[in-house]
Length: 181
Image (cartoon, rainbow, N blue to C red):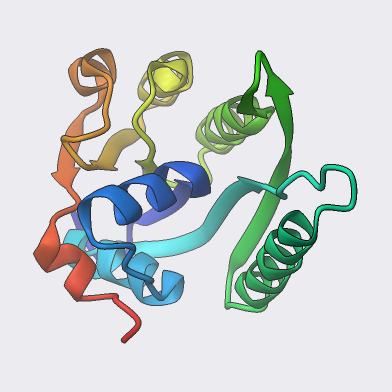
């Protein structure tokens, strides 16, 4: 790989939040440093970082829900101001008394496939863990794109590990390099 090769980084916000909470004591990371660390480690230039998430639901004017939503809006507004970052929002729904993200996997997959098809980059980097991305990974590979998965072993579907070209573990050392103190 060379510094002249470009990559696009696709971050599933819910996935990274889940592993930061469960594996890294709710560590907060600087997403610009996070993206730059990935590019530096792989010796790539970044086309853009795409960050996918959902705003929290507000149920019955619940003050905690209102606060959570306001905090998320502030966080996303700050992310949006980072250089070459783009925010894409899905919808959060309650299905059978559980919160479920809708549209996130589809948005990430469509963007992955489109950027690959248009040959905007030579490398696609996913921060996700779910097998719903396998068709997009296959499409990227069919277009000659090298696919990378940054993940934590505590939360990943085995099928995605079998399909991706290169795997990179998000571990304590990696998180430490982009942690906000």
